[in-house]
Image 1: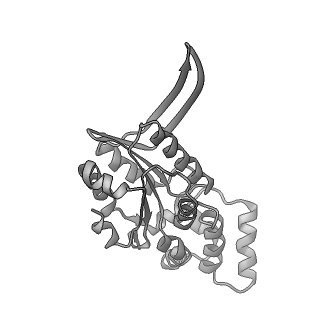
Image 2: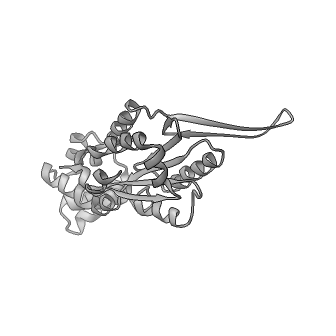
Image 3: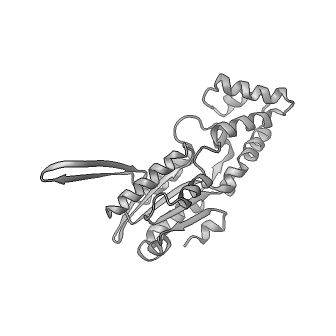
Length: 244
């Protein structure tokens, strides 16, 4: 089912029989997901230029899924005993695909704080326990993209010939840089680093650091059993989708 993705370097992990469930009960649903991802590209300039709010790359992927019939949905759960509500939960899910055999829930964590993985996986666990979903899907930055992020950003800055922050921020319409960020870049410059390296070093550490949502952080949680026993499909976006 996922050859088109693995051939392009996507990270994939399947747990709790999710592969069997998707291949038998959700073949069309799986095909829609693979199609939405297989030709996804992200310009390197978006990695540098995107400021506050949701990244343009995430917005494009969301639009593809919405168009394929994967809307956002909020699950409401209430337990009523003798007419009195004793438990109430609400779980908003990025994308939900309903089919005859059941429901697939999908979350995208492109660049968030890594505890959001716990929230997503625990939501999947609760929804699965209540038979509200059959499979949970999580999409995040893959291992190759995380490992190569510094090189991608540095090459992007070098290609455009930027030699100072002011020109870079204006050209990429970046949100305002803080004093701390500017001073960190200046310290790198004072050590003799070229501007592209100095900026990329600070920028990647600050924006795409180890404590953000990426493949290894997600795998660590799966290895600890977070989300069990919900069937899970994990997808990591690879460096190959970045277009120079």
